Image 1 (cartoon, one colour):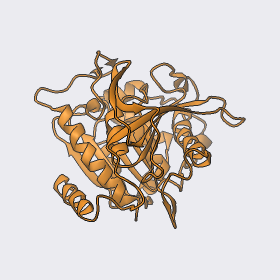
Image 2 (tube, one colour):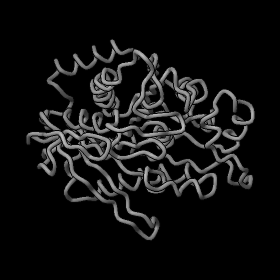
Image 3 (cartoon, one colour):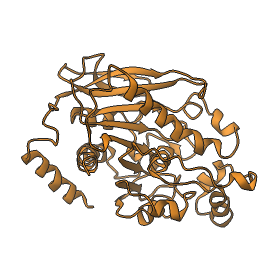
Length: 342
C-alpha cells in the first residue's frame, strides 16, 4: 500500500465523519499517565507502562530523560476510545522512545499502552542471560499481560471500543518490538533459522549476528511454541527482527500486517528481516523508507544514546526524521482505523 493510497483512505475517513466510531470524540490532545501491571504467581516482575489516551485537557511539553513527552499529565480520559494499541520498544529501549507516535494515536482517539519490557530495557538486560529462547518467549507474553490487565481494569475496560469480534486491539513495534508484534499475530520462532542465518550471512548482517545467542538449545526447544494472541487484530512492525520466523507460520497469518523498513538499516538488514516478513505474510503492506537508518522510527533523543550501530540520535546526511514521524502520525491511525474494523 502506498503513502498516497493511505492519504486517500485517510481523507475518505474524514469525509465519513472523521472516524469509524460515532461514539468517540476526536480529542485535541493526548493525556498521559503511568500504569503498572502487577507481578503474579506466573510472572514475577511487574511491568511499567506509559499510557497515552485522548483527552480535552491542554497538553504541555515535559522532558523525561532524553525524550520529550507532549501531553496532559494525569488528565481525565474520554469516555470511549477507538481501540487499544500496545507499543513495544526495541531491545534495550524505553517506553518513552516512541512518544510522538503514541501521542498521534491518542490524539486520533486511541488508548496507547507503551510498555517497558522487563529484562529487555535500558536498565535491565537480564533476558539475554537466560536460555536462547527466553527473549523470544517472554516479549510477546509481556504484551499479552498488558492486554489482560487493561481489559480487566475497571478504569479502562469499558472505554475500549469493541464489536462482534471483540475489543479492537492492535500492536505497534520497532526492532525487537516489531518481532514481538508479528509473533503475537502468529509468527513462530525456529532458533535454528537464526543459527543458520548467522553461519551463512554473518558478514552481511554483522550487528545482529554479534548480538544473537546462537548456541544450540536441545532440539526440542528449537521450534518455540507460538505466541499468538487472538485478541490482537492488527500489527505494524517497524524495522523488525524477523529472520527466525518460519515461512509456514508467516504464510498462515490472517491478521492485517504493515511492515516498515529502513532502507539503510545496518542493525537488521531489511532483506533478511523486514522484507522476509513482508513478502511471506499474505497481503502485508510494505513501506521501505529511503535513506533511513535503524533508529529513524524512534523520537530523536536530546542527548546521544550509544548503541552497537552508533548514536541513536544520528541520521544519514539528508534524512529528515521529523518528516518521517509526521508521516507516520498520519499513516498509523489510518492503518489501524481500517484494519481494526475488518
